Image (cartoon, rainbow, N blue to C red; front, side, top):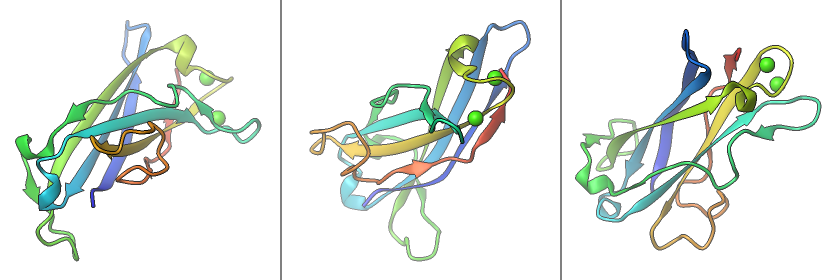
Length: 144
Ligand SMILES: [Ca+2]
Ligand SMILES: [Ca+2]
C-alpha cells in the first residue's frame, strides 16, 4: 500500500514578484504491484488558525497531477520494514497572489495536506478512503 513520507513545504516571497510561491515535496513508496497503476495526487494548502479554525487556502479537492509511478525514476525504499518497495520523488508548486495567501495580520502558518488515490478509487476526492491516508507537512512560517 502506498505510503507518503518526508513531506515538506517551502516557499517565500520573491523580490519584485507580487505572487507568493510555495513548493510541496514528498516521497511516495509503492508496492511493486502498484507501480503500473495510475495515481491521482491531491494537495491542499491550509493556514493554521487558533481562533476560527484552520482555513483552506486552496480548495478542498485541490491541485495535483496524475502519474504512474512505474514510468518515473525510482529508488529502493531502504527504510526498515519496507524491503521491495519503490520510492518516487514528487514536487508540486503553487503560485498564489498575496491577497489569497495573506489571511491574517502578521505571519501565516501554512502547511499542506497530501493524499493519493489510485485510478480505481476515485469515487471521492477527499482524503478519507484514499490509498495513502492523509500526510501533513511541517507548518511553514510565511510572511506575505
Ligand atoms: Ca494563523
Ligand atoms: Ca499576513
